[in-house]
Image (cartoon, rainbow over all chains, first blue to last red; front, side):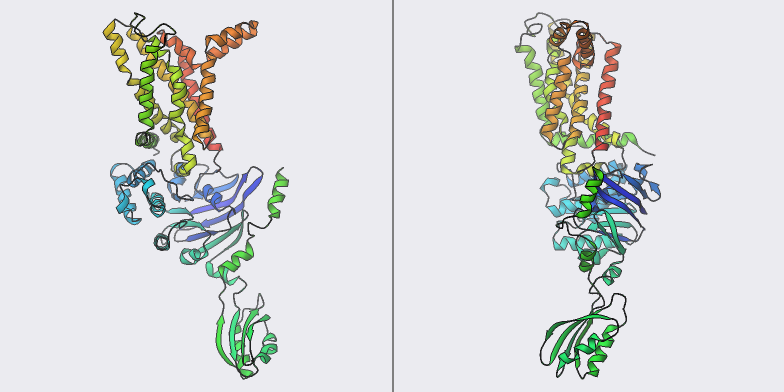
Length: 328
Length: 254
């Protein structure tokens, strides 16, 4: 539904987005992850036709944004970052304007406004001026705007930013529901959100795509994936350590805590050795006459993976400096 | 299937709504009417006070219009784009399936409508001279048309400066300065000064006169509808609106 081909964006000498390519099909919820300033919003602005790319193409439903922007934009609903709304208008006035700007007039407009007011729970505030609304309502008003024309594709820039936990939950279930038959791209830096709604994840760092996969796949690539935590009990439990270290496919064994008769360990497998390590650990413990009280294989953590593939913005960015020199 | 007029009307309607929900519309209209009514009454130049001249004509009324527009029209136009950029709604507007020029045209037409409304509300001046004597209807008509066109020109300048910045005050000041330069180019004092510098000076004076909206307005106040005046008032506002669209397309960074 939406396709980005080698998208590039220069801001002066700074390369904000570098050769980003991906496609999103209907029925997919794509999470766009990255540290602040990684180029998420810039990419979304190019997808929606707000920023012209410095290089590459955006296709919506096969229509090139650079060739027929109006036709491509018609297929996309967009919730910009920080959800801007015209503060001087009422909720329904704002939605009516957005419908008209999208070519819906008369009865079609009124029906569309009714529909999104209901979808986004705005019934109680529809006659209020937007600037008297709380942030959550304002956010939902802007979200409602993106659904007016029932677009096949949605681009949502931080859709739950600034909402309270209940509102977050509502918005997420709304996204999940719509994701069944629409192509949705959402950016976020909240990792729990990725688990909650996304069927696929892209990680972008300093303008470049660094990872692409389902949340489970990315979790499996994290350091703690496959790690076996075990609590062994029995006389001279620490003596079992050399045997554990000697198991095939084990990188190292970390001792979390030890006492005369208990041993808590974390067995870290080799990167490529993904055999059922838990079984081996249990068997080894039994052979040493120990009781395996707890045994758990870690399925990996998104935040670990995220930290491993991105550079925090507090670190001095060597590539950014190189770009500046190259551009000057 | 693109509905250009519908898109323009949607933007225009929203903008008119914004003028009337904020005090801008009322302040603009009231101040314009008060000043347009009182200035010819109390100030003697160029042709004498409105009632003391003994002539049933509106030239002492129209004389002040370029100066009023100089201050009031930038105030009318300053928020058009600056406000959109400040609040980020420009991102919403320009990701709608409407083209940049449709948005520019819609906003401009809304502000232009305000201007035309304010000018139309000066009709008691016409009734007054019609009651007092027998004015030249044609001259009054071209006077009004010329006044509206000067306002249109200044509005297109204000539109452009509004697109240049996120700050309404900066937009206002830039527009006032540009409009002032435009008005000053048509002042006879400037022309006389340049004439003193020999032939190149005289040529420059001619050129400046031709560039000033006020000097074309001068001819229309006398009832003259010149071809070059018509060309000027078509070309200059279109140029500045075109510049607005170019700036908007080029400046889409945060």
